[in-house]
Picture 1 (cartoon, one colour):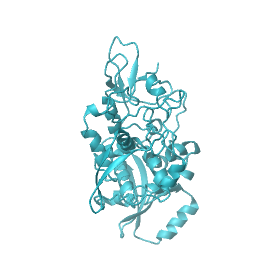
Picture 2: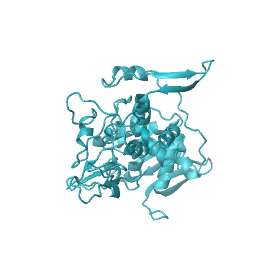
Picture 3: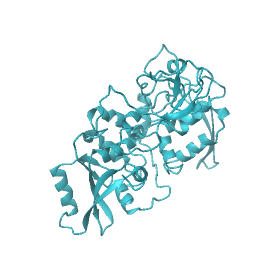
Picture 4: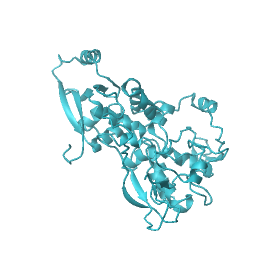
Length: 396
């Protein structure tokens, strides 16, 4: 337990005192599980974690734009809440972490004593079929008696792990240890000392930020090195990105037209005039998991080292959990027609049924009905039925 009484995970650091840097770390599965869980976090939740100061590209400004838009610009009040606090599709896994990162999973229930629908929602401000707005009642737990409870979430059970300063994770072995000891002159180097840290949720959140913005997150965490402002330079996109996406284009995706207003010398774009389809697409980025971004862009952001963590999944994570980290899905009912990154939507949690209209009209749901198409969940010019923040039936 940490000094504030919260749970912690232990990690042993090998520190060069003279050069003031962490050479590498050794840990059990608990620390590595939390590290790998970073890949499941939606981008909007990451921005929310850092109070709109994530410094990752222009995501902070995008998040603020959602905040500042009035409710009248959304299909329903719940849509705005969904974008500002996007759900993690891997919540069932992350709930079992020894140290949890980010918000808990609230449950909102219809409090109308005469309501016969017994519905609840994962987002605030959703409206029950009886017309009553759902109210917060408790935190969501994932206790399913038919699912065996393991002491490991992602990492291979019973293993020790080696983690480099730039978050390359591998199974601990005699060969790996001797290689690192030879590389850094251990034990001949008298400046090397071992430090065991107990990291709580706050410290792991700080490590996440450093992993996004620096190449030495462990050193930065241990020595409390300040993070440079605007550290996340995104750089150029991969040259083959557009060609790859065009070859694998979603048949439901339609070209989006935008009108750009440029400076006279063509040095910059002053602003763009767009329709609701483009806004849907851009706002939808907040619901996309970090692991999907890593899969598409490989290195994101360029100054960080999340790419090393993503590459470490193979060989360090249970086979059945690798897709959860390397190709994470969006949460149920977060699907959108205009998803350029072609993120799949996860299936409903067992025992839950979404609003029938929302579910049938979403082509990214696991049950399709003919050629019906999804209603997008962000900004539209008129009021339509909500396709994302729908009510769900409670488990009996």
